[in-house]
Length: 288
Image 1 (cartoon, rainbow, N blue to C red):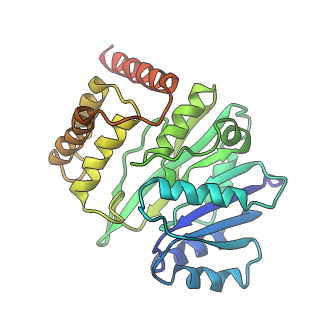
Image 2 (cartoon, one colour):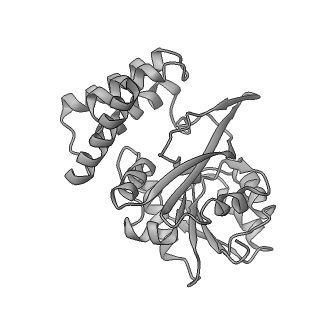
Image 3 (cartoon, helix red, strand yellow):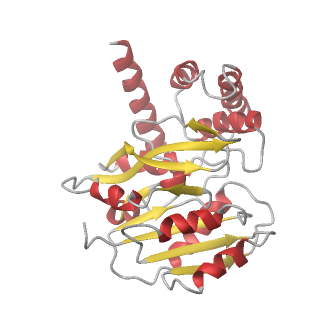
């Protein structure tokens, strides 16, 4: 593990108030990245100025600015990630991690992440537990068995390259798509409860309220090709998520609204078939 090398990529849009603590978390790591590419994705605040202060004394951190898209959507972040990948100068590295600009964690975090790959040749993507920190409260986010959250998604390099990186999806869900794509190609994806990160706002609400966030989640799950039966079961099983019960109803409404609109999906038919087969198998296991 001591010889393992990793690269971090961050897309930051108007994160001046939070990104400083994220950078401090990385600087405190027992195992630091060989390179950290931060893209200021069209910020209108002083995000770049905050990052530049750290760049001056830490040569492995590199800052690039990206012009704001005329019409921002969730694929804007993916565009920034693609730009960051193109800016990597290190030729030798083993892992690539995506890190949101509002996350903090312990000093042993990335050393622990990399240790999960030892003796697991087919482990392609690793994630962990995320807690939202809102108004002094710590709210655990749902820990999916095999979908890692994009805020801290960590890839074996070969896996990242084989799936073609991150797919730009207009409504989001690129982290889930990456996990499905990896498993389709035979890679393992796993979350670990001892990998803990803290998210300094309510998930999905960076530029919208909680109800809009839940509606969008349903919209995203339609675009990922989720099976309607699985979507229904999922809504029931996660009724405790904020806002309790109503959130599940709003999510399911978003899913069926997208169905009624017959929105065109961006992922392949093969991937949709794979996703639905996995979901039906999960339902069967629950009932058996």
